[in-house]
Amino acid sequence: MQPDKHPHVRGFGMASARSRARLIARLEQLGIRDERVLEAMNRVPRHMFVDEAMTSRAYDDTALPIGYGQTISQPYIVAQMTSLLLADGVPDHVLEIGTGSGYQAAVLAELVATVYTVERIKPLYDQARRRFAELGYRNIRPREARDDVLGLPSYGPFDVILVTAGAEALPTSLYEQMAEQGRMIVPVGASGGGQRLVVVRRQGQSFQREDLDPVSFVPLIEGHD
Image 1 (tube, one colour):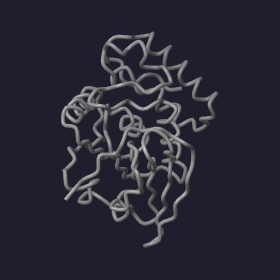
Image 2 (cartoon, one colour):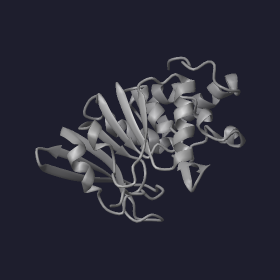
Image 3 (spheres, rainbow, N blue to C red):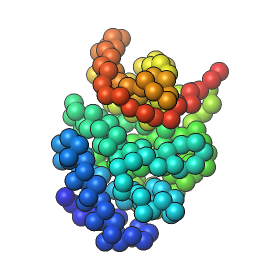
Image 4 (cartoon, rainbow, N blue to C red):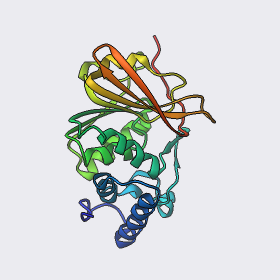
């Protein structure tokens, strides 16, 4: 594993490094095999993406509350979705829908050229933007989501769209934001049970759906006209 590239981050010091190492070992035990993903997650200081009161739990393999009814995703799910994002090669142009704490975007920024990330909840958007700046992530482009639009159509198309909240049905409004041969990774199904991780692949105007593992995400807040 590469050393921490953010030595100036708040508190935790060597305890953070040890806690991250234990988390990485846990992810390997759970079947995460992509060394690129493991190294990226080892470099990102997850304790910087939770409230200070939650610092002691930052490297537990569990989702944690971040306020406003939202959570920072379980590290295993972050690793799984990031592995799927890299499955067909390293994309250049990625869109994340649902910035939340900013942790998933930071992991992606360790691996891809440019990450656009959108968030509807303004306090979370403002907080994540400050974290990206503090940690020196210059390849993350945070945007505050518009009420009437899902995604960032004016910045696409994207090689991969990663949706980090659960949609009750496939968000087909995102299809045209996918590049040719692009992919969308999205949790689909009713919140509280029945969600599955879905990968959609684009070939021209044809879109193939593949259903994967059961997951549990907070609901996606979609745009409205």
